[in-house]
Image (cartoon, rainbow, N blue to C red):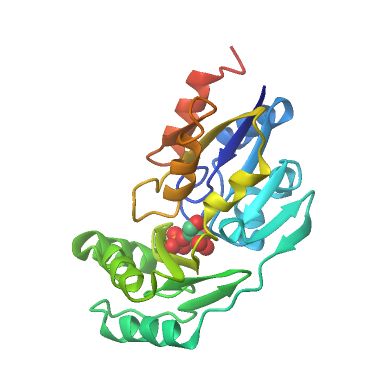
Length: 241
Ligand code: M1P
């Protein structure tokens, strides 16, 4: 049996859109040297490199970016999905943007990535302070989960929206979510998956469900931020003990 360690990035290995903690990074690099590690992120490769550094992104077994729609090995792109968001869905998202009560708009509200789009009311150009203000708004009004629900009611036969990270929505064709990567593993693999959005509206949900359906060959850990991930890993695998 081979053990495969799968990790979401934002909210699981790092604070959302921030760099990895230096101490955790050293521990994690040591962990990677003796374990098969895979990254499964909604984000794109460039942001993943910015947050984790190439020592991690080029030495993990694989980086499944854009929810598995953009696959990188040893720093090279080996596959991507070229799906495009239909115009009617884009119009719906523009309406959501126009109707939101949140007033700050920073631009780049619909970021097109290989095989998916990321939609953000505050905009991907937001500063940390602007992001913080949006998180407060979203916590108060549950805005992202409401957009997820409305979007999936309208387009759910063909497209899925999920909440990922702190400010945005990850949107992709049905079945092209993080769970698509499970086919890369065999009956000889035992899978451990760590994600911060394993709740039904979150972008780690389908993979968490797919892992638990492996009956005995997989477990998922719904974490509350990177410190929780670090503590859980240390308890499971005390490398420096
Ligand atoms: O992985 C989900 C998302 O995580 C972050 O989202 P946010 O900026 O809203 O906190 C980003 O890395 C985003 O790109 C990614 O899709």
